Length: 166
Image 1 (cartoon, rainbow, N blue to C red):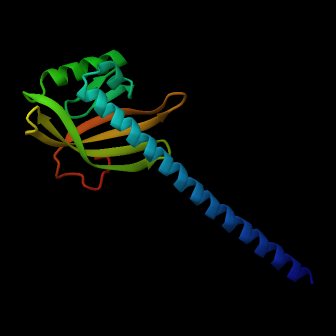
Image 2 (image 1 turned 45 degrees about the vertical axis):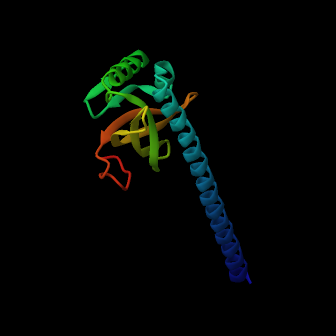
């Protein structure tokens, strides 16, 4: 009888652990889905700010220091992020009017970071294509601040189709 009781206890314990694991996996999937949705929303706001030359709003989506990996520049403070974007927009393709985002892929890198890879196209006022590109953005969850970028890099559109930090 004692062996049967222990077997029953072990089976119940195994069922409880299995149910906990299943519930935890479902919760993790829900949290990841929420994080990805929020990052997409924040990225959309960043793009709107970029088009409107709203440099403080652009910088609000970053947490310094920020690695502008394409140029090997590190923006140590928020004001450096603003200056970097002012310089970037001053040297953007002549006639630039707006950008349109194409494919966006977001992949979890760790519990508190995601990599967003996005294709984009820049147009002039006549809706003519000026430039087609792809960029990577590292998003990290900063306590009391939420999701912020701390890394970005322009890459060839044909590269990094799997969206992972190179």
